[in-house]
Length: 573
Ligand code: 9MR
Image (cartoon, rainbow, N blue to C red; front, side, top):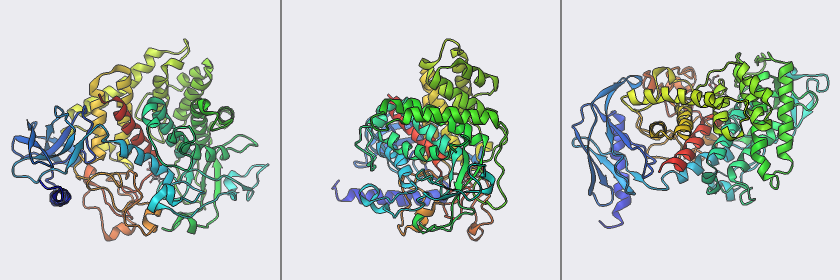
């Protein structure tokens, strides 16, 4: 085959699969690809014939022959499917799956570096969401933009007024990341997102050491993941009131801005109500960060000690204000991240403070909250407590029950593994999991599976985690990748102000769309004119800017993606 014809073939392939995806009969694969030693699955329709082959895209040669599994229904999609397992194919190359009578699958790679660009891309996304800075062409390429939201003048909202800082006091709290498609910054979500990035770094430092993100700070001797996380930690530190050590729940405009660039949004910004959840999540991530940044005092001078002190002070504030749940003031209309259950936040902060200080009293505080292990989310952070203790068993004092910690984490993973095994799609997602941000639910499940794999070395946990990643990268009933810029059919119209306003067709790359969500809470928006094509849980997704309930992006959704991509690169052998 002549070289000139290769791009033509790739283009025609993706057109063929586009037609198939539209009528729901595509063979679905992980569109970004597979590591050579990975568990490798594809999904075919129930009425497909038994035999499948994997062909080399460049030569047309058949490199693998297999038989589809039996047809079974995957309830969340109301679809019957058959699985193709080609795990035994480990030779690097460019391939496609062929089944007689069906259009071929998208082309995919099997390669040692299959996830290298993805891993860097999903972390670089945070840089693209930095507040209070211009992004220059050297680091942002075509996504260069002017500075927005300097946040050197932020007003204390009435709900946050205190004797030392009455309503209207001007404070400075620059930097941080925009939360999502909006330009506001929320302490709870910023803390959990940063925690997961640091968690990924601590678990798989070798993956991050090899990564070059091309940030303004790159080359300073610290891994870029820590450079990027530091941008957010600096902002979070300013969200603590030095007068009483409480932490503001959010920094926000009163209402969501229009779809303008950051530099065009000049509405005043406020810090709003100090909350117990903000203080505790702040304490947790600062305690963790104090441990992580201790080794990099040359780059982040004094940061480690400062963050440990900040964590302890926020913890003390939370003891004194144990029920300060966030109540959205009437004049504030932006995101809430409100949560009435605070035992899990107490447990997580205690666990991280225990790991940072080795003080047994913190372990007792953690146990006293009686929190079950589970899949973590911004509102249920108990899972972070258990998995942090499990990941840092070397730091536990004799006082801690090491076996209990292991048992709890593996127990959760075991339930997920069973769901994966029993699922016709080989995806550990039930109907109830298709909520706002369901793609992050899928990936947080993978995080727990990876942690159990690290504890037990039981291969099924790693394979199940791979399946969760496959799901967001194309092996799903919509036949699409949910990560901008990656895969054959990524989202093109995410609910993300910069992507909509920058005049560039392609959205900012590396962002995970929220994913299928039958709640369709955006139904009264502009989506009225172009409604969701389906109410079926796993099909309830719309690639349109209006679709904030399924097509927004968010820092806490990318974080488990960063973790899982790093984990699979480090562990798949
Ligand atoms: O991720 C949040 C989701 O769990 C909630 O159900 C939803 C509605 O309260 O809010 C989501 O968070 C949004 C936040 O409030 C504002 N920035 C965008 C976030 C992602 O949609």
